[in-house]
Image (tube, rainbow, N blue to C red; front, side, top):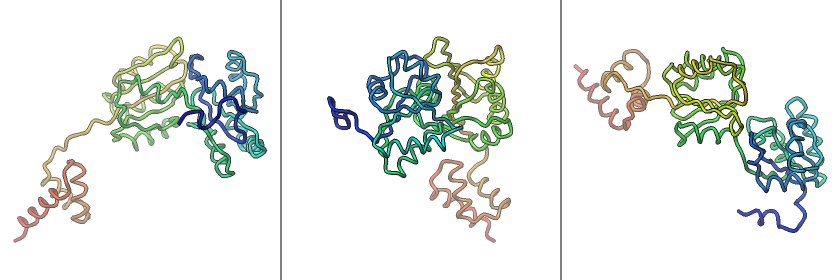
Length: 292
């Protein structure tokens, strides 16, 4: 759908709308013409860090009033923004970099707007997740964004253990001072040979994309202090081939568990990637052989 269908050119911008405006993740030239127009025409811009956003505003000559909106003040400030929107004013929400409301307290403001019947519109643009994935060299057919990894090793290892068998590329945000510890935890949980890509300072002067095994990543990032914004992408788990036959698996589960025939067949079919009907047939044959 074209902008003209939403915002007729030559007329004042629609009011009472929350605009989610994507801002550059590094290179200021990545901002869109539409984003610049919206930021100049709205009544108010709610920013994660007004000091950071003023640099962007100064560069592009934007004079729209700025107000802070971040996780430490989101509850009270969010209600004030809602009041402005209900009074018919237009507000743009921006984060320090990329698309607001993604791994960001802005999503709660979006929820409040929807509760109050306030229209929410996205002004798309840069995203660290998609930018990093596109240059990672890892599978892009299926992926899952998991946000920031837990700060403590115990929490990280628990999360990684729950995701160890994922056959999708996993994407995480990480702080530079925790990157090495996180990679070491990934080695401990997922194995040294698991593929990983680490994107650092995307679109900036010192952009770096490391691609290789987890053990190689640990070696690489052990060499010097890590700086900048980090996106870690863990490659899909390599499917392990069963070391036993279907019949052996059926016999083992029958002896070692109290699962029903249906549950055993379902599990074996999943493990071997076979149709349930084929495994069920072998299960019946095995039962017939065991009968006196």
